[in-house]
Length: 145
Ligand code: FES
Image 1 (tube, rainbow, N blue to C red):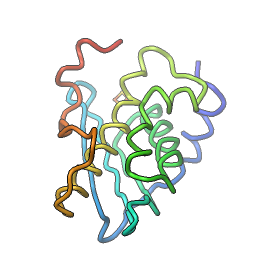
Image 2 (cartoon, rainbow, N blue to C red):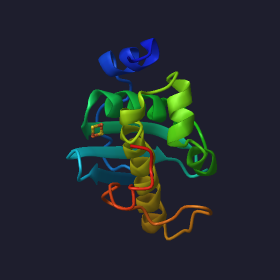
Image 3 (cartoon, rainbow, N blue to C red):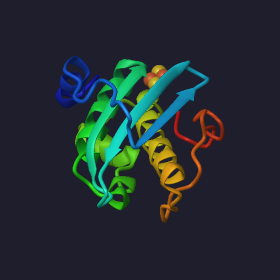
Image 4 (cartoon, helix red, strand yellow):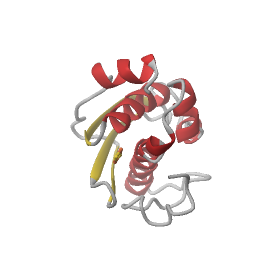
């Protein structure tokens, strides 16, 4: 049911933890399943994501996608990190079962929420970044379930 990559990232998740004095922190939840994700970003003066950590109260698919998503945004610029969509993360993991697709949105939305927090703290605007929802279940009906 799950690819080897999903199982690997679930069993050995990368970048689990917290960053003290993070440049941006984002927390999102999905009220339907009750899962919660928090992402911490450490962004340097050049706008490069030097470090990223995550913590979750989430299912295995949420753990695996967050682990992969954090690996994919590390070392990237803020603009490049915005291109790391849940679809890109799922492709990197060789896919997820359809009922687990929504779990991959937690990581994407939490990264966006952390970038939003960073932009607010710095008083800047990030091109292409919309204010994140704290509950990703809102408006999710249109998504594949
Ligand atoms: Fe909630 Fe997977 S079931 S994130």
